[in-house]
Image (cartoon, rainbow, N blue to C red; front, top):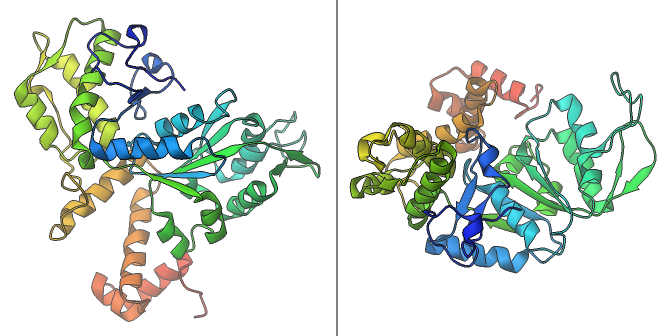
Length: 369
């Protein structure tokens, strides 16, 4: 954990907002990142954020598994790192693994390890991430992307506190705290049969719900000033300031991409601003609209809710997105119609045969039903 502690001048650029009590966190060595591939800073100034910070401090010293929930770009890894830093495991390793980053054929060997000759190309034995994180914390990001077959094995590892490498019969004891993260509602994934209910409860001992940036407006300007100072240093620029109109524009935006979007907006603004001042015209904001600031999308504006959900999917840059979204729509219509195929087909304006074929392909109904 590399926390930019505001009380130390050596750890903070001179223009970083003067936050106190460790309320500004950054990823280790964020200067090494040429471009932002994830939210690299987290700030706690808004009342909702301060409530979250208090909860983190309460649960961190325990050994309980933690499930971190939040939209893409809200800084889930930063929160996981801070939980680790406040635990008695702080001296041990913190290993972050994106569960959606590996092909399904390699997930098992990556997590649990393999022996020499376990599969084609396994020329040497290799410890998995669970063994590598022993004595510390293993952060499993995008846990909802794990295949069901691996979910079964993960549940056993969490219950027995031991792993069996691929190609081996010998158990290896592990001492790991697991923190999982997801940007989808696992309750819905369980209901849809995509996530095991027993694994959900095993991981959901403690939950941390990260508000979207639009729901914590008090953090927008402190984060913007931090990113301005951070990228000013990387670019070798002089002092940079946001004028009042630019600040107002930032506060009015819905931030569908959350902290990650804000970081990229400020980075781009520094590249094109003049005279050391960021003006409204320098802020190129996303045309996608998230939910209105201060909570969920307005009940009377379903299009805004849909656009916010799509923005989260676009951030994932996943393969086969169009087909996945079609599955989501079909499943939603099916459940909304209380699993009546005729009614669901009528809602979507398609034939019952098309609806039925799609539901079978998705595994939502049995082929002989």
